[in-house]
Length: 232
Image (cartoon, rainbow, N blue to C red; front, side):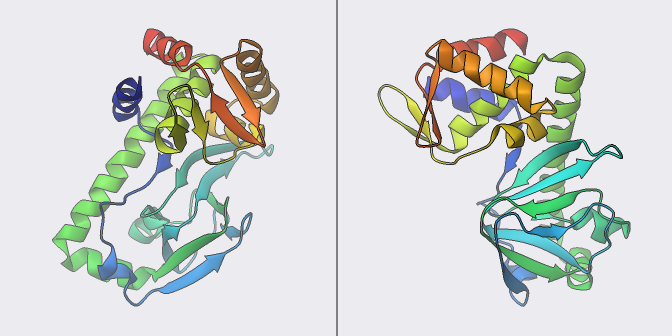
């Protein structure tokens, strides 16, 4: 079952983006390392800021608000994930709001330093391209989900990535090592909080998952994987 999770996760881009394999020292060596408390706004949608940001530790949610106040989360920037780079490259305002969802340490890299290094460092250029490709594939997957997939698929898809990246597996189940609210899941999947709650409640009623001390435990992963494979 673990191999099936990893296989699915490779084929379906995760909204939790991390890049442990990247060494960003060329742009972080002289950067400010700021401690950002949970729920702090780093910048707002349409803000013009002086920095590009890199997560050293923690998690940052990138989301957009509609004119009527509806929120859509695009991805969670994890350790080693850069964000705010598009604004530095095209000199336009940021298209998302960035908020720390846990206490986080974030590098603040001046835009002029970032651009200067980008123009002279081929290795950095390739790293940025790989990261942009990962984000582009994720956005394409989200567009396809919004267009073609049902609400159950969207929640199951998110659960599979949570299990792959943040679970402590035992012989009987998978216990998530991070907490998430139904509203956070709703923002990420584009669903209402009520619908997410309903889907998770159905999984609990069917004995597939349970919650203990605020953490989700997946007791039977097979129905979740089979559903995603069938609808993929």
